[in-house]
Length: 444
Image 1 (spheres, one colour):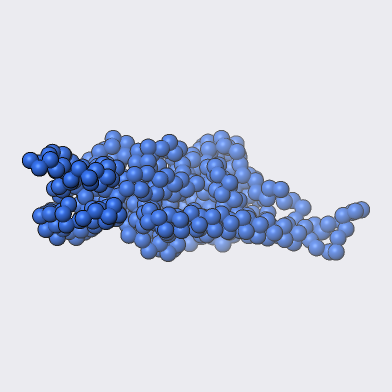
Image 2 (cartoon, rainbow, N blue to C red):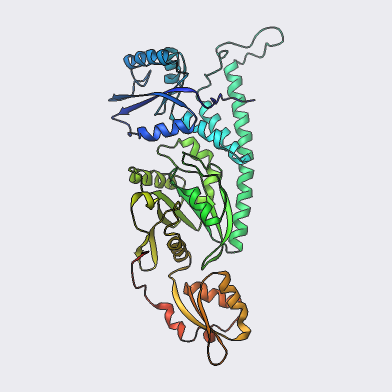
């Protein structure tokens, strides 16, 4: 049984953007993108200003009457508000406008419902929709005011509204149980990765910042990526080999948006747990967006809300549009703070790989190693890490190789193979404490 009536794409819609002094002002352009992402055919965007929301209609009776005339003239089927409306406001507006009214939360839920692909994603969307609906139980339920009655329908006096609420609670309980099982499966998967000491790097960021495009290039994958809001909804994980690190799990997550409905944050806890349990977060930022700072703030607000206490590397994407150069900026000699790249033109991706390597295993240095013929397995391991710069032989027939790798990772690799570390490193052991020479590495 479906409790919600998600509209089909292509509905003729009027958008209402209200600047309310006492509320946070929202981006009118982003509102249009949200509506288009839901498949709305936008007829008109109406703007209004208010000191505070009208308790009955949000926009006031005069503006509501104007809007009703516009709805009739344009034959609109739907009016979408760029703010959260109370159930009463929605109901009162529908009476005056004589068409369906949805708010920002309903719009985002609709997009999520269209984007969900996996079983887990669909469960989470349905739960969020039911939680939103449980405060309303109005639209499409013309019988709510009546008691059950008639032959074969008389019950113990429970009203239809109470029955519907009880059915909602039952279904929401079932969904929460199923999502808990999904969460437990994730926990087991994470525990196995942690036991095998495999780091997890999660891509997070504002919706449409280019996370999926970047993910596809780094993971050589084909995750759905498009220039639209919430193109990615279900978390995607790929295991890959990363230069200088070895095995690593890369996770792509749902994009964040300003004023993301709290019920969505709650419902997507299982998805966002990949973020909570990550070794490193790559915060992908659209460096070409005029609202870049507000978008960064919105993402960090959600990360704080879900309790993500994880190291963050900021990735300023789309430098092909913003005009920035590809570079790494360091917060301190051993700590990359941000890296500038373009997933689209693939500028600076080698610097991103270097910054992730430094964030996870430490400062990268160049070493000259002397390997006897019996130490061939170390050469193989270093090749797998893709850190060998050059090779040569000395007069004794030993292999001389130059590698760029973090000292900790080199030491760990040699010890895992039970080889004599001092003999292999020789004078190179002195390089372990060599300071980083520059705080900024630029690609020319």
